Structure formats: C-alpha cells, structure tokens
Image (cartoon, rainbow, N blue to C red):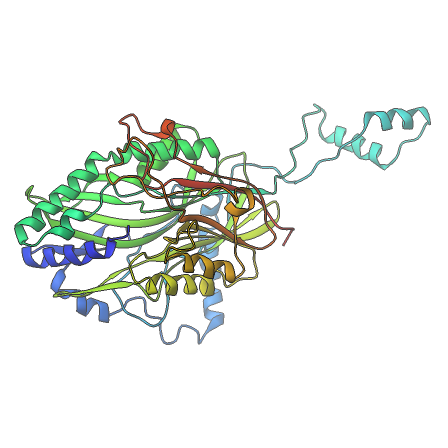
Length: 487
C-alpha cells in the first residue's frame, strides 16, 4: 500500500486524540492494546534484543534442542493447520536485524505430505528385450530384478511415478479492501473519525472473504507448491481491545482451499502493524497487517521444509507523532524446501514504497544480505513495489539492484515482449476494464533454475467474484521452475 505509513501516523494521532489505542499482536495472535502515549517507552524496551550470553554455551543449546526434538518428534508426523506462533514486532529503531523468535525457525524438518513413496525412480523394462533374451535362453540382471520385484509385488501393482523435479511457486498481494484517502484528507478530529468509518465500510464492501475465495480458486487451479502472500489482513471491531472478527483473509483462503479439496498449511507469518482507533459508529476499528507463506500439503507432492526464518528489516519507514516515532514494519519469511532430493530457499517479502525510496532500496540490500545469505539456490517472490516494466520509473533502480546481485527475473525468460502488469486495479475493485499498468509482483531466482512457464493470474474478467469485484488490486504470478541438480 503506497500510503500505508501515512495511515499509521494518522491513526496513531487519532487514537491519541480520542483515547484510542495502538495495539501489538501477542504470541497467540491476539493483541494487547498499548496506550498511544506509551509507544515511545515501549520502543526503547526491545524484547527482541539478543541475550548477552546467548552464544557463550553452544553445548547447552544443543542439549536443549535435543530435548525439544524428543518432545516434538511425535508431533512432526502429523499434518498441522498452522505450526506458526505469531509474535508481534515492536515499534523500534535498531541497528541490527531482528529474527522474531518461536515463529521463526523449524526445530525439525517437516515433510508436508501423506505420501509413503520411498523412491524417486522405478525400473523400466523393454518387452522386446525380454522376448529376445527368452529366445536366447538368457536371463540378465534386469530379469532377475523383475523377478524379485514380482515376488515383492505379487499383484503387479503399478510402480510409483518418478519424482517431479519441477517446483511451482506463486505470489499474491491480497489487498485490505480500501485506500486511505479519507484519513489522509482529514483536517479535524470529526473528519478523522468519519474517515475511519469510511475506510472500514469500504473494506466490508470489498467482500474480503469472497475475494479470498477467488484467490483460493486460482491456487486450486494452478496448484503451486509454495505461495507467498502479502497483506493477508484481519479486520476487527468492538470496544478496546476489539476482538469481533469481521474479516480474516488467511482463514477464509484456507477454508475455501479445504472445501475445494486442495490442502495447504501455514509455514510462517510476518506480523506487521496492528492498530486500533475509534470511529463514528460507536465502535473501534482494528486493522492487523500480515504477510504469510503457505505450502501445498497433499499426497500428490512430497515437500520437506526446514530452517524457517522470519525477520524484520533494520530500516523501515517512520513518521513522528505526539506518541513518538511510529514504524511501518516490513520484513521477510524464508524456508528451505527439499523436493526430489534437491533443496532451495524460498523467500517472501513486501518492500516499502514510501518516497524518496531510500527505505525500499535499503530493504532490498538487506534482503540480499540476509535472506539470500546461503549457498542454496534461492527464489524470491513478493510485492517488491519496484516497477520492472519501466526503466524510467524511480523504483526501477531497486529492481536493477536485485538483478545486479545475481538474481534473474523469471518473467523475462518466457515473456520478454509482454509487460506482465500486476498493479493496480481501482481501490473499490469495481473498474470494468483492468487498470493494471505496472509489474511490481515478481518471481526472481539465483541458481541454475530452468523456467518452464510463468503467468499472470487473477487479471481476467472471468476471475472476478460473484459481486463483480477483482480478487485484489494486484494480479498474482505463478511460475513453474525446474530445480537445479541435487544438493
């Protein structure tokens, strides 16, 4: 959202003026409201600061990890709806990136499948060859293997299919459902409260659950293995703390996927700003921003995940207010995925878009230095807010930087003459003709990947919801990549 930071500052001021609160998500995914005037002090007390003695006793850490492994071994054999505990970022101005604990690294690798297949290949035999060998009275090693296989498989059941080394990835910004023009234009407290009401009503009118179901249909149609989602938001109302859920796009998405028979699990959640303010409706409105990674979990695919990480960026857009410095926290989620014995790192991010774009460029630099700090092949997906389709756009410099760091743009491998626009539809999503005019949702990779295909999705008239809405103000992108050789 290009004006997200303005919203944060204005909502905070409104909360301060009206006795509202700014809230931060707690470990269970709820939020404990914090008085707006207390934010500055909370920023100073950073609970994510590393413990001074954290690296002094590695053997103790290993023993602790072994004990956790023994306790969690049984759980690792089960499919989980969500093995992520959501913790909140803190409004902070630090000089070190923060790995958010507990939501952040898989203690053990997870095999996301119910498939019991044990081999990636099966023996192929030529009937003509066997005929010739029989005529000559010989039985070679292949015949002996077939005879042994027949004894093990007396019913002659079909051999398992060879493992498919292609990986399908997807990125989709799901969109809150409103822009923040009414809040930005507000000059007085009554105008501000009326603006909160207008934004809330716009969100409800955008039918978030119906739009999430439309995104789910795109996922079911394309069957991506890993999906990076941005702006997977929650809207709640009520008295402080507001807990009446009016929209939860992640729950709506996963529920519709289950209904369609396509099962996905939540890998990680990057919690963003969680803010609550009054309205003219006599209730508070609370908005919680999130980025998410989900993974395909069915018997048709065997994907092992390990080393999940979620980190906030060191540099984020900030605005000063009477409550102190308010930070629009961005970050990234990564997980190492193994398919057919080949491992790569999958990373989802949502870069800042605030002019003069110094924050966006700093975040891109940190993304490469942190999430891509591995010898594994790497795939980046996300809303980069960097226009890859126009070299004259100021944000193109961020895209150019990523290419200069050794990343390739999957879209250019298959559609060099097609602009592949992904942003943006009208704020109310009711524009009759698509208004996509920029390509900012990208699939980038580093390593010897092959690009089998890549397409923009959710941009056709037939993709609209029953109410005639576009699924999001962004189109999605889905790509099939051939993994590099075995690692």
